[in-house]
Length: 152
Image (cartoon, rainbow, N blue to C red; front, side):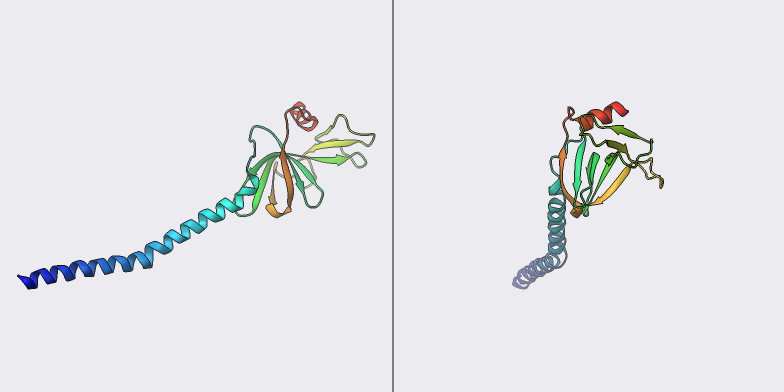
């Protein structure tokens, strides 16, 4: 009888050790990878918190370009803008898709809808997140948003 009890204890001990082995070998690394992935996603998208999807955004780039449109945060270091407009000064204009911005100075500045250019781009641009200096939500009362809404 004593031999059976010792054997039962040994069996339980064996399975306990085996369970701890599998836990250390397979489960813990998967858990750590999951935690690291969630941390990376949280850090990579934290720069674009507060995007109001009901309005337009102005996106200011490090090369002094400004785009207006609907900002969409993407994973892995890029963002996209849809319904894209940009500013163009009045010296070299064609007549495709341009709307004058009211209240501008004596120099003519036009708000141009992306898509009418010679190379025919789609109405979405993708930007590297590192090239964005800052962005801001635009009020519906802003001159740019009023011009965009009036052009539709």
